[in-house]
Image (cartoon, rainbow, N blue to C red):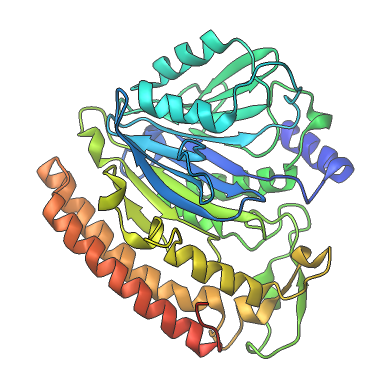
Length: 408
């Protein structure tokens, strides 16, 4: 509790809302409802459009999210490989010091997916790198049930294991845009950190930590500093002119995607590692379950089509312009709240919820079949993804039409 109090104090002194602002968390499988470890990354970036890609030319095949304009497909923002390793990161501003080391975060995560099977192998890889051009907190999970953070900076790295009760007494660790091993006054993202800890602590007390807890966190509409809950301010309907200040909540205008990784128990098939993903803003995008496969076998709604575009990203971009209609310099900090949530239930986020519920219901049923068989059934998965693509396209068109919006 003393640390949390310190963080609140520093947050009051040093919040910078326009900074790149990922919020991440890891949870030991010893504390989850199904015994499987978890990771979350709410990815914030000025490169707002993402797609899923794959690679199979190195030691391990992998899938990952990259910026849509990255034609190399190696600027990995997060991902998982065929042996159950999953990796993500958040920028750490209190570990940041430019050096002559040319390594970049995305390349490091791509190499990890290609080369590493375990958390220990990831640590061995970064130990050889010695120091890093940019401060970063890497979250890493493996098929043995291990999950840990590595706070990396110009002086090296420090490991924080979710199974270590001295650093994670309740089995979870959160990182936003600072590292515990750095100078606190130089960090950022303390408000988001505080709220994420609160969400996980409440779930821990209820013995109910699951991947859905992480999704709830990714969409949390209560501010970690002011305690303003936008659900308490919902306008009557979509037409209301109410403008809400929307700055430094866990989801933000710059939140480009969300990734909730549900790992496997020791001894389970690592290909059963499930990435529950919102490929664009979690406020405007449904959650889709992803298993490691070639990119062409992934649902079309989360990868590039023949035109180099992505259906869910295109719709989310349109919806965000509708929710954030102010175009001047500070417009990203203000939303038309009724267009997002309202008492009539016609807000964008409210309308995608039943669509997501059906996707998740069918996805979890399929996942349980995979767990029972001990492997992913490629035929059933293709059937599910074919249905998913048709369903998402039709339902998003309906939602868009209800607001007078259409794909361009």
